[in-house]
Image 1 (cartoon, rainbow, N blue to C red):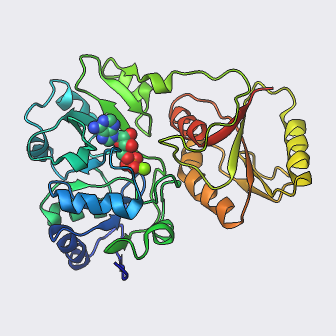
Image 2 (image 1 turned 135 degrees about the horizontal axis):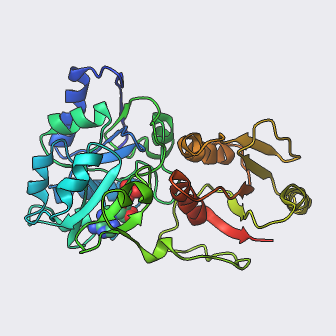
Length: 346
Ligand code: AMP
Ligand code: MG
């Protein structure tokens, strides 16, 4: 594939002829990147194994990493599963359409590549207007993982998608920047007590307001010691900029001094050092300091695009301070922990 069509669509008032142009590509078994309220997704017909395989190829994503299937109306859930768990209505009534993905047992209609060989399928109904219309006009459930190259930060604008996937997909819908900036919350509701697999905008506190949930083991691990650099070949390294991320815990006594020291150490080694800050007007002697925003909503929205800015400036080492991990902060810290090459606690 060499030529990728760029289709610009007004996010507030999507032009239906353009939506149909993109939908036709999906109907015909092609790949289309499009905005959702979380991040940009790379979509294909979820029921067509050949189409779904194109997603994995374009992203260079390992075949056992399952995709999220996007639907336009609740009843389409019945295409994907024969067994809707009892709690489903309670949860979806409150959070669909929106940034919440549920895992259900997959039906025969769902081909193995879509679920990475799993017996469960991940499903969500997005709220973004372009996404909804595109799925509706495609007439099929649309499998769509984040529209980035595997291992890169998720894309929050069409430009990010173009940077990663131009020439590798059939079309990219440009519908502006995404609202939330972090991937959806993933909840396994096939269990008696649902399990939170990935935190997102819909927080554990939100979910606990309506149902009982447990956190997946991967979300409860506490790292206390100074960690060794993690092996580069970790299977599902995620959300990472090219720079090595060093996460500084709030347990550090004089964090500004520690940051200055680290900048010195790495600059002496001829490394370009970047700093991510949540305090406006804070001055550091780094090669590049970028302000993320102060409140968690802004931080979530800007995080991945800030990662990409550091990459474009060839930053080698990126220093980031921990933020409070309640509510949306829990999702942000989950991404930062995954991105971190090293965690410093004192
Ligand atoms: P992405 O949209 O790129 O963030 O990728 C979708 C993510 O959803 C995967 O990496 C998993 O974390 C999760 N997911 C999707 N389907 C399943 C499944 N059947 N079992 C467990 N996790 C899933
Ligand atoms: Mg992804």
